[in-house]
Length: 229
Image (cartoon, rainbow, N blue to C red; front, side, top):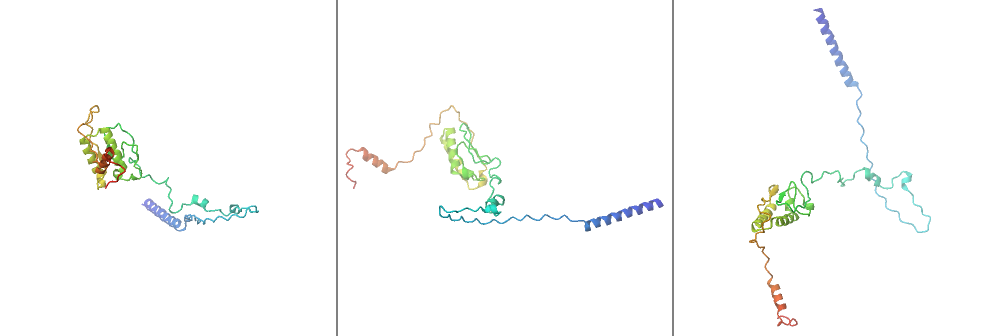
């Protein structure tokens, strides 16, 4: 019985000592001092260039840097970032991931896709500044390149012309969300098959004034020196 009482007393004494030591360390231990912020010197205004003296005189240029004073703010400009200037090399690219502005040349492809996650059109042209999120398809360059490739690879028929019209309307839709992916229908035409003879491109109507001028030039009875009434 006496042994257990002595053990309890010892444990209680150790607990009290630990509490006292911990409170002492918290109260009187030296605190870590925070480092003072480094003051950045203000940029000095550029000094105007001194006017040149008359030639032939004993004019010596004084090097301001020799006396310890900086010549201009060019040295500070290299270390201190100025407002309004961004480091373009460190900025994240706007065309990360699969999106790219370059349209590669693959005229041998038989299926052309409008995949805005990976802009891939059979043309050597580039969309340039038109490469924006889901608005790439609205670029006139993008549409022109796609139409030229479609005509080249599909030997345009009447049905193909309707497909192109559908593509153009879909590509210039008002909802950017609908421009996520527009794919070409699969090519069912045999490569060895001749183009559809039923398709005839519609020529623009001739200007009647041009037709009259051509008729006047070919008529020998008309005197060109006599003005028309």
